[in-house]
Length: 315
Image (tube, rainbow, N blue to C red):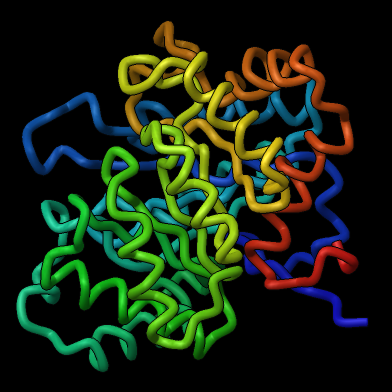
C-alpha cells in the first residue's frame, strides 16, 4: 500500500503519525502590513511565545497534531520560525508556497509568464526555502478577489496548478470573502490538477449552499476556515451552512480551521484563538447530532487526504 508522506517544517512525516486533529488553514507567523494595518501581523519575536503557548495547550487538551500554515510569498513567511514553533509544541507544521491575492503580489507577478512562475515554485518545492533546507508541503493560500481572478491572479493560479501537478502537492486557495471559488477551480483543473487536490478557501463567508455543493460534487474540498471570525460571518450561519453540506452527503469534502491572521485574535490579547474550533464550534456541531467519527473525518482524515491525494481507504 502506498504510504503518503507529508513535508513538514521539521522533515518528512508519515500520515500515520498524525493521530489527532489538524487545523487546515492557519497563520503562525505573518506580516500583511503592506497597507499600514499593523494589526494584521503575527511577529515571530513579539507574538511567537503566545502562538507557541496556544498550540502547546491544544496539543495537550485535544491532541492537536498538525497545522497547515498558509503564509506564502508576500505575506511575511518565516519557515525557520515555524520550525521553532513546531519543535517547541510537538505539533507538525506544513509551510506553503505560492502567491496571495493581487494587493499582496510580489514584484515578479507583474510580467512573468506562467511557465516561469511555475518553474520558480517547483524549484522552491524541490530545493526548499532559500538555504533553510525546509521544504513547502502545500501550495497556498493562492489568492484571487472578486468573481473572476484578475490577470496576474490567473497566472498565479495557473502556475500553482502546474507546480502542484509536477510535484504531487495540493493547492489551497484564498477566495476573498468566499467569492470566485468556482472560477478558481475551473482554472486549476484546466491545468491538469485533479479537483481532489484543491481546497477552495473561505467558503464559510459565502452564504450560498448551491456553490458549496457544486464545489464538493466536483471533488474539491470546501474550506470552512474562518470559524470564529464573527465580524465577517456569524458562527450560527457557518453552522447552518456546514450542516446543510453534511446533510447533502459531502462531509468528506469539508475542511475546518480558524485562519488566525491578526495578533488581536490571539487568546493572550482577548481573541478567540486557535482553539475556538475545538472549544466552541465542534461542541455545537456535536450538539446538532454529529458523532465523533464525523468530526474525525472533517478534522483529521480530510486534511490528510487533501494533502496527500490518498484514497479514503488509505487514511
